[in-house]
Image 1: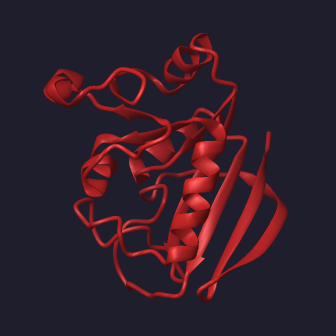
Image 2: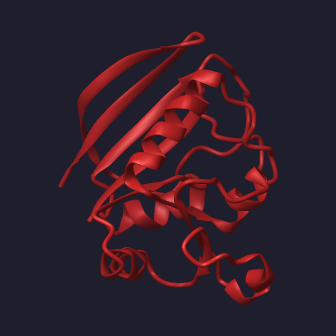
Length: 171
């Protein structure tokens, strides 16, 4: 299964001021790109803190939310649209493959990104650089010790003073 890690970050590399920071700080250009990319793959994987920061399921694709306590969200579940699961990164991808998905977008947060990167399960990284500086906050791997090599596939000007970089993870 192809996995694309997709994140927006400030010029100084911050994805959020803290784990409760509302995800609505990015430009319209980033939101449009995120919508297109995630709908193209049909499934978005994210941690429960990211889901709570967004505040709702994203329509038109399966929202696969990782949680150590998925039963806590039982009342919110809508099979095929919003599902809460617990498992290791490779198990999560196997669950999706069994359901016929060939690719997925990994959308954070920092702990979730690091877990998939540490297991070498990410094929591409798609980063939007937003014209902002937060100074402090979370980076997209929560300071985990990683040593990955990347190859630039594409760079695009999205408009709104926003740039997007697509990298292949060299395995």
